[in-house]
Length: 170
Image 1 (cartoon, rainbow, N blue to C red):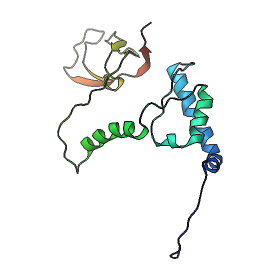
Image 2 (image 1 turned 90 degrees about the vertical axis):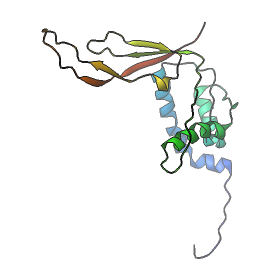
Image 3 (image 1 turned 180 degrees about the horizontal axis):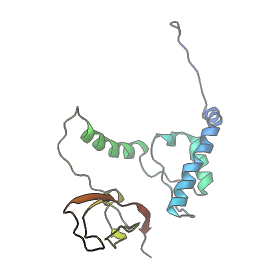
Image 4 (image 1 turned 90 degrees about the horizontal axis):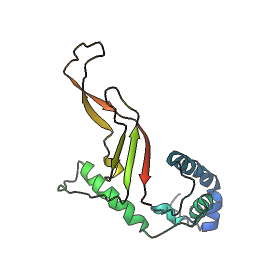
């Protein structure tokens, strides 16, 4: 700006007014997530990340869900605690020692998928994190229905996960 210093002030209320159209767009992913999870009633919502600094967004999400939001986590640290190890492992610049990350899930997870030829199992109940549930499995070629021998090769088959439900104790 031709070596001129410029300053400006922006209030939270004015910022909220300017992002009204963006706030309306936040409802679509929330609606899809609730529909896919087949949930209609939510007791608690914990927001994390830097967007918690936008009061208009917090009010918008709270109005949509109909429940007060919970803020018991440290917004920034919780996000960076997950990103930092993942980025360091993927980085070609930084060398890190091997480490283990233990993810604890308090409730069992029931995963279901469409059956594939030769495999009748369609569900898996597990207490491990959903991110570690195998979506790719190796199956050996099975004989054709006519009795012909199958080639002794293995192939990768991706199972399409059709639903994930969380089982809560009653």
